Amino acid sequence: MTIPQREGPDERRPVLIVGAGPVGLVLATELLAQGIAVRLIDHSAAGPVQHSRASVVWPRSLELLGRIGACEPLIELGNRLDSVQYYSDKRFLGAVEMSRLTDTPYPFGVVVPQDTTEEVIRTRLAAYGGEIEFGSLTGLDTSGPRPVADVERADGSTEQIEADWVVGADGARSAVRRFAGIEFLGTGNDVLFAIGDGPVAGDMDPHALVYCYSRSGALGIAPFGGGTFRLAISVPDWREEQGPPPSLFQRFLDERSPRPGIVGELEWSTIFRARRRVAETMRAGRVFLAGDAAHVFSAAGAQGMNTGIQDAVNLAWKLAGVVRGAFEPGILDTYDSDRHLAAERIVLTTAKQTSWGLFKRRHELALRDGAVRLAHRTGALQRFGAPLMAQHDVSYRPAGSLRDTLPGLTRRLRAGDRLPVFAAHGAPQPGADRWPSIHPARLTLLLWAGERQDSGWVAAREAVTAVAPEGVPVRDISAWPGFAPLLGTAPKAVLVRPDGHIAALTAPEPAAVRTALRRAGSTFRPGRTAVPDAPAARLTAVAQPAGRTAGGGSDRPAGHTGEGPAGHRGEEPAGHEAGELVS
Image 1 (cartoon, rainbow, N blue to C red):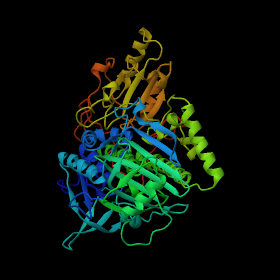
Image 2: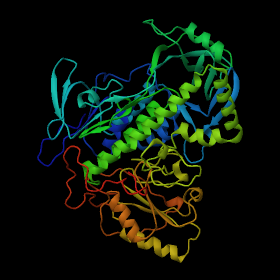
Image 3: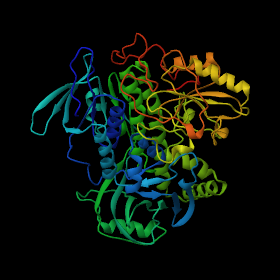
Image 4: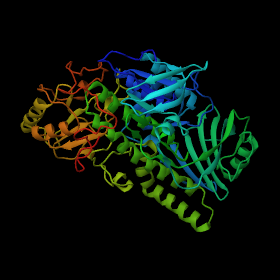
């Protein structure tokens, strides 16, 4: 990076990120936006890798990419995806309409080649002063107080980099994971898919992701726009060295697609082996894993890159907060607990989607098709399928099993759930003015009056505001539409994390709020009076220099340096409070 390694006794070493795919790029840009020194290395630093597999960016990823200003360029360069449609033997089963999502500025997906996604994020990385340097990781020593990485350059020279933290975003064959000694665990048989990009002439839907099931296998069709499509077909075996030819895709398109089309000359094709693997842990001392280095799963639902982007943002605000001294080091433990269960759940759901598409027996086909049709007719497919596909239903509720992470049957929110509030390190995200903005690097306290906004509520709001730390923005969201179905009729104080997930739901009383702030790792200072947060006067999130709060004061806890030994867990990490607090 352009930020050199620091050597002074009171200075920090950089965060070393290995891998400059979408996940590593987002993580590096997020950290730079928060004033954290970063070195980003990749074995192919010349430019984005062409013909990569990820092709769909879902609404939750668009929201998170909006934090660094990468969302709008992707929307302009990509093709809008309004629905996900399901067919069996060319007969319509049902659809999930992304355009009916109501709690996001982006009620759609975007189909865009991964190399384009990488190029957009590289531009944002450069805007924050970052760049990618060529380097291959050849060793990682974690025996000392800080990890030391051995990096080999293109000319054969080597360098040792001592970093405060190392993040492996280097893919499914992660060198960081291997050197850190972290097991990559998984079960189930691999499934082969032939994947290709190219023109398809015919009456293909230009704005729908289409899944076509048949006894011979499954077909997925994603539109890039301009008559070009991504085709993914399940194949029983493939032993050729060359990628699958257009004739193979044409054969299965004829067999499985409800709409006829003529496959032209492919720009690229390959064989993808759908595996189910999750790292035993996503943190080992001062080493973290993110993206495919931490988890791989079936391509069904196009969830892979999107899951990695959530990893990057989850880790970035916690790691930056610890480096700046805004949060206790123990909060880093919650990265693994947050994202490990989220990854396991996506492994499970994508594996089910894949297996359902490969059914061959009559009773299995009848059961699957009947269930999807019924879910479509009753609205259940839309109600549960849209948040699942959009990744809006990812929750960090305290959980002991995957069952605890499943969304409830009501819209009522709980600690750990996503709230429709949005953050940006620069100008507010376009289209997000229908919801309150939150701070992109600090906790935000939202106050909800419930049914009555009377003098009693005004007094309660002023009392809570008075005890909030200077660095924690306080906003009264009682006048904002859309929160009543989520927060109910009773008054509440909602402590929200920088990524928009709820850290705590509590009574709007000074003692309860002080307790919630302490348990979430916040500092304590005299507060200040705040005014109601009307939609026209919402918080504008602006990146602050390291060690400073939005209010201009230091955000370093008294007596806390932000330093800690590898694997230090802190006194009381957020997320361990009997179902009420989660980080």
